[in-house]
Length: 308
Image (cartoon, rainbow, N blue to C red; front, side, top):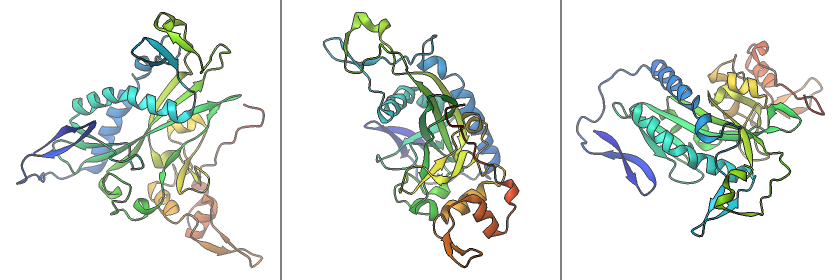
């Protein structure tokens, strides 16, 4: 029998009876996945009211010390992302409990995913959920800055690997992004270096506003480009409507093409008509190389210079 137990600040699975702990249940992967996605999507639909005020400003105003001083929050993306995760964690614990899941946090900072949901009645049912936070592009509000969708390195290529991953990649029935898109505050009165008093709380301008949540499987919002320079991270598309709708470059090809492309990214060399060699680093070339239907590649939306 399994139930979530708390170890420090981490909720892990405790085994309280080793005999007969493997459920004799035929696993309907697609039904389990659809049920979980529906529940998580319904859950995030109500998050906006929990984290932002009626005027659209983030409800978090700063850090408070024992002397009732309030220190403004930096607009740095990593700082905002971490505080949002902390802000949402109690609600995610409640979601897991209400839907019959245990919640397992990544044991190390560089582990994938951020959250593992494990079904209490059948621990073979696991879902990976990663927080993905980004901001809208100033002057082009239909686009965001994008985000990375995890590594395409060891644990992605070797689905049995336990390197930098909470459970082997193949153990998860699906891999979801719990996405958060926000606008940076443009209010000129915002001062990240200012210290406030508790009586000033309602007058403090939040560093972000207009927070939007979404849930999508990561392969459905993936691009064919890396997400962060030379590191082995998968990049996302950037048009917000396409992200929310799951209209990524692989969305018509399917998840198998996503896996195949990113498992082999930057490792296939072909000869062009002139006789020169080059490495495949885009999806059109890859689909042609594999003999697939290149018309199923969804083009990457590009924002016009100067906005729009």
